[in-house]
Image 1 (spheres, rainbow, N blue to C red):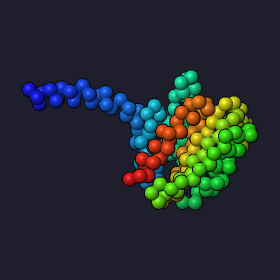
Image 2 (tube, one colour; image 1 turned 45 degrees about the vertical axis):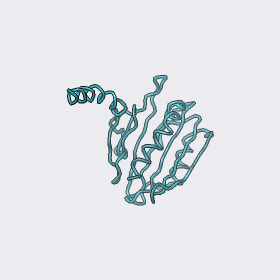
Image 3 (cartoon, one colour; image 1 turned 90 degrees about the horizontal axis):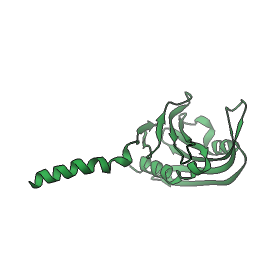
Image 4 (cartoon, rainbow, N blue to C red; image 1 turned 90 degrees about the vertical axis):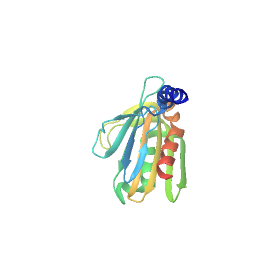
Length: 174
């Protein structure tokens, strides 16, 4: 009878315990595995430069977008050049934060800013998007830098800071 009770409890509790992992997806970029945070929804990358892409639903129905990039050793111009370029995608970025840390023996840089984001391709027309934000992590991995860039409505992006940091920490702390 006790065995039946334990099995019954397991059948009931297992779906409840796994709810937080329903939308999690494991992706590999440059030899590192990342488990996407809850509510991040995988989508088809919109360019060949993107290794993975996610939509992050906002409470107000406006999504943020997360893109993973990897260009190999020495590709994409390095940490500072990318952070400067990303900050330049804002009209007078506010709340600029750049923090460098090391996880294990791997350097990681985080960047944040908000303001009016100028959406569009590098050399094409730009669409101003007020009250947008940037959250990024650059992992200086063994096979070259991995760039993780989230842009979207400020409230949606800022609600994901701890999720992004946990995802990066969990992928490198193995």
